[in-house]
Image (cartoon, rainbow, N blue to C red; front, side, top):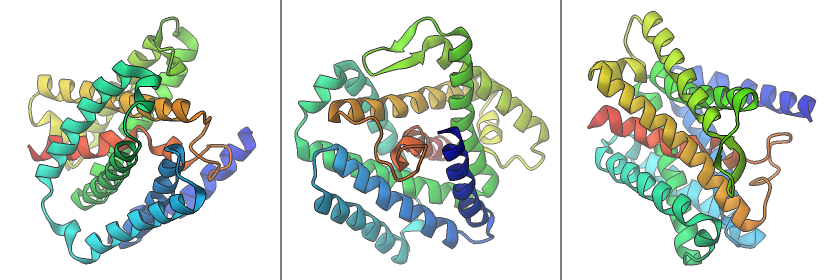
Length: 273
């Protein structure tokens, strides 16, 4: 399993990194758009849609985003969208995690389906806009989520005692969550020290003042955990271990980007308010 995970990760990096570092955004936008199609397909399957309908919904989501791109939508200011999506994610986190697995299945099926597809689409828009802000900015957002996840994993393994959400994700602990936050603080401090140009998310937040910067980082790390837990809740409701098997050793696309779904639009919200 470990060998398979490593091989898949290396193949993904071999494709994603050249597109990410390419001077223009087109290769990165096109490649991540394919991931959005896969994520839409996975979401439809997790919400009870058949294989054919799931393919059409995933493809339709990608086609809609491509039309927005071709129509010049990526060059528009989407500040109202980031504010709306940010507020929606906070509300979803409170309501969904408060009601638990059984509460999710009680929601109307059409609402669950279209709400998830809309949030996936907004995450893609936020990712491309973040790349337009700057490569350093996008990398700082991505690494915030990855650092929070990695530090939480090792902190939870070493110190985990109190379960964070035992009925949703039994492996997560409060100690792991705090370790993830501390890891992000360390990452932000190092980034601020070496970031002479001040293009990162951390530099932009620090410009608001130390106290507000710390609060924003706590908020983003918290929402990364919320994104992870929300996807775990949906999978548990659907009786699925992974969102799919598209990425051998890693599960599906949603399994890899769940924490990014709220953090990307929220990061854009924080730098545009």
